[in-house]
Image (cartoon, rainbow, N blue to C red; front, side):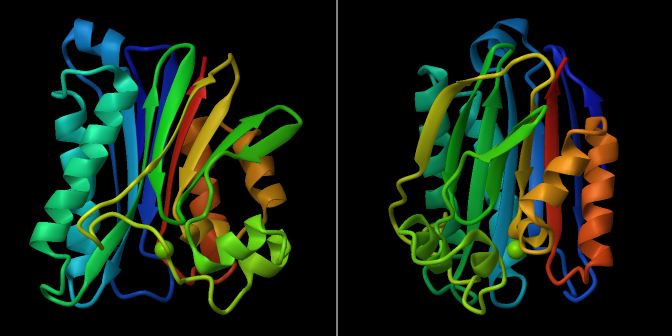
Length: 252
Ligand code: MG
């Protein structure tokens, strides 16, 4: 559980939960804020979420490693923020691939979704079926594509949103960090970050249990930490089939 007022004009909450069916929590998240003021200005605050997959303990290892490498490399890379985000993403992929991917301990990989937050905009780097939503009073949009078999069918118009949410093959991921030698993350932004805006980053444990309408109602009516708790509680009330992790950032 995390509830933090940052040095920048936004508040961040986060929560990760094992759920009701899984024995382990293989999701992982991190919120990284540099202590150096210059870096805060050029890099902002970085929120990262990963949902690990793979046998034995390697899924959990993959997600933790990916988040930690992102947090470390992003603030070191000597480029602009979008490039630094991409470099950090590639480093995370390489590290996971070398350590737990590639058939070591059973093939492992992880979804990886990172958002670099600035006072007036944010940038997303993403691979996998975790999601980023942007909510403003009266509306909520999913900003990321689901890199999954079902997500691709949905983007092609072959499946409706609700059908996709309940599809038996929804767990087949088509892009992730650590599965292959190379990864090409989707990079989006800068997207304007306006007063009152809420950004939600979540693992599929949330989006497979709750409809977009249910997510929006909670996200728009509570402060970040309270919204995180309510979202996880609702996913568990509906069965808690998977690990659920959420990060919510709200612009003051
Ligand atoms: Mg999951």
